[in-house]
Length: 77
Image (cartoon, rainbow, N blue to C red; front, side, top):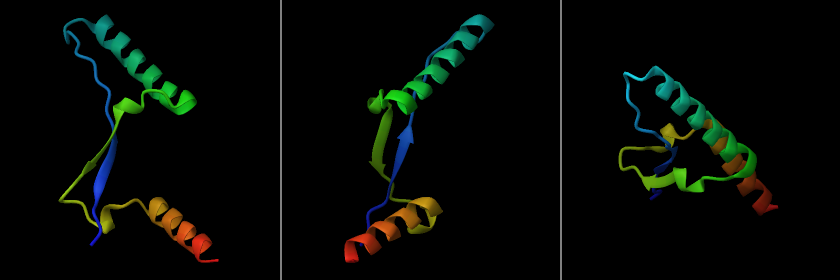
């Protein structure tokens, strides 16, 4: 039986919601963090892999299913 889980990206900053400038700065920092992960594959610590007992194969994105099928087909040849 397959085990299903989730790969998630989570970065957050605590802010003073009454300080709009702080909120905006935190948004900019978050955008930079996302860009760094994409460009330099940094901050892998922000990407978590965890089992999810409620997930099913139907929850897997179609692209990931297609890639798995492609890899299996390549391995079979």
